[in-house]
Image (cartoon, rainbow, N blue to C red):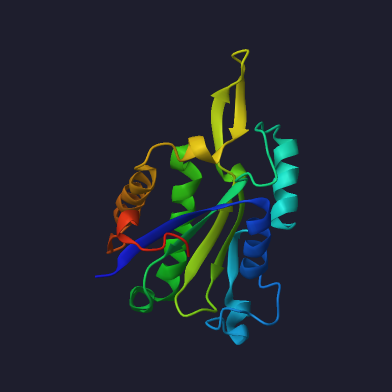
Length: 198
């Protein structure tokens, strides 16, 4: 049986630049030898960013009056990876593979009241060994300022509050994706994975 895989990585401004270059295929000499440039045209977006991740972040922060003290090394966005194994996608075929990523996107839009407006980009890569989706989002929480006024604030620490927050994410994703008819097992807990980045 295949696994429902969802992983999260926190990004500083500098790290976000690297993710942008990889996810958008902005370099000719890929360090990832798994990328087949002849298949890159098959990649597609569920949400297309018009600008670089950093410029999109700055634009959305200003437009939506998002609060939060940002230092040069602050976590300003996160990147989720949605996938399974190659055998799973080969078995379900192209149409259901597309639906898998569409449902993954729908799931995260409503997770913790994130909202689609806080998603910067969602791109599906079909030019590597296993299909997967990179989803870039701003960890926005609904909070109150010192005067008690309701605000929206970028705060990764509070968005992922609690030591079992990733376990809750994996549980929720597994329940959601199987409710949509996909036959997968729950992904391995983060504490069972040696490296929780991707």
